[in-house]
View (cartoon, rainbow, N blue to C red):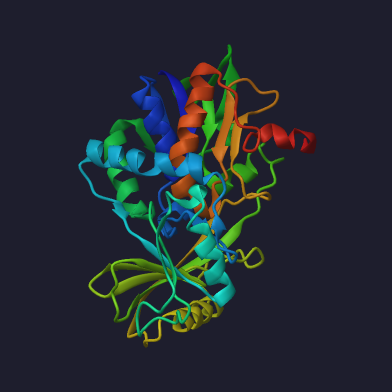
Length: 348
């Protein structure tokens, strides 16, 4: 069988790219290994325009955020499923100086699309926010499990459930063969699996382990609270809370150290006891050394590409960059040098 594109991995990145290629009329197949460590399925799913300890506008926000809701809403429409939740994010101020700084941001046109309101007083007796905080808009969260399950049904026979064996990928007469498939192009969307590829093992992945909890706790405001930890209300008093971030312990198992850290940060933010810990999940994110994704073509191999390395911000990055990647694959439109893998060709 001859196809246009063989995609490796059906996490968030592979799903988005496969969908856009299919919409462009291309014949695709996706190889995905069920039950593998899939960082997409344990991700928090937040899209947040203001991030980090210093509370700065996230990288490329003005390009990325206009693409987020239209893309996921389109996927909801074609699958008949619901997985996007638009929700304000409240970020408490830690100091009066921070409050003053954000009062200044309120007059900055560059922040207008993301600022709902700035508060100078606490918004709840249950929150540790004596200096108030900033309420953000154009934010929310994605139920990635629901999305991936819905898109699995959408792709149907285009999905091949097996462990990808790169030794079976062979070049024949200008095409790549894999078992009974013949394809013009192979795209690695398989997260950290690409680290072991003979084509892309030169790229500086920087894996990061993250752990999250789901807990029962009172106080269910109509916004996400995010400072030190995020706290997303899933319904019925259950909240997703996290996440940790470590480059050293990359074992896939959950740890008591991380659980203690998350609960401690939560108690610093929401001053109520946790009634129950419902789940404790962990995943290894395919982050990169410079925290920017990997897009592009192998420097010497014809028809071998990568769309990968989205780390903890995949929900925000993937809608825009999947469109960017398709424009490159189909129309040879230049890849943004900040995300193109050409920035690392001297590592080969």
